[in-house]
Amino acid sequence: MKWSIIQLQKYRDKGMPIDETVDLNDIKEIDPQVIRVSPIHVTGRADIASNRVTFHLHIEGKLVLPCSRTLVEVDVPVDLHTIETYLLDEREYDMYEEEEIHRIEGDVIDLKPAIRELLILEIPMQVLSDEAREQNEMPSGKDWEVMTEEQAHAVDKEEEKKVDPRLADLAKLLDQNKKS
Image (cartoon, rainbow, N blue to C red; front, top):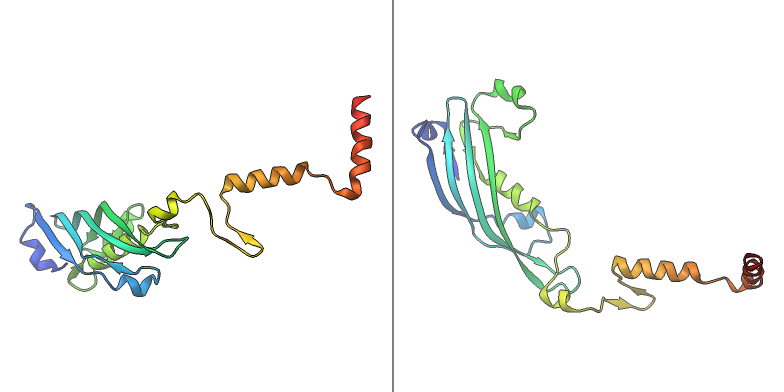
């Protein structure tokens, strides 16, 4: 997924088709929760102009991550579309502050770092296996348990309704005042 600027200029004003499979297993070194990365299939096209190269990409593959509850391996499919722009003239970077623009290192455009970054951004905060989704029971242990937000709100409401036994007589007195 590397091209020199000279190679890309051959496709200037025509567009260059892209259809490659990339190995990005080094993502495991960046994010240790990633167990495996399937070969990533990248398709699309590159539009080459005199001052910039724009890649219109479709990225497909899968990441294998641990389930957040059971640590079972879960396949997380990746299917995303992106547009990545590289400016050929370094003096123009200041003009494109609003857009996401990549810098070219030397005379070579390498798409692997951009794809790697996109895949890392696709990693969900919480991954659940099918079994964990189907289970209504959350993990628990001695003096602890995992609750959903709804369960936590219900527990909070119950605790608000409970009266401290030391203040029970005072609560009765307040109830009597409300009735009269």
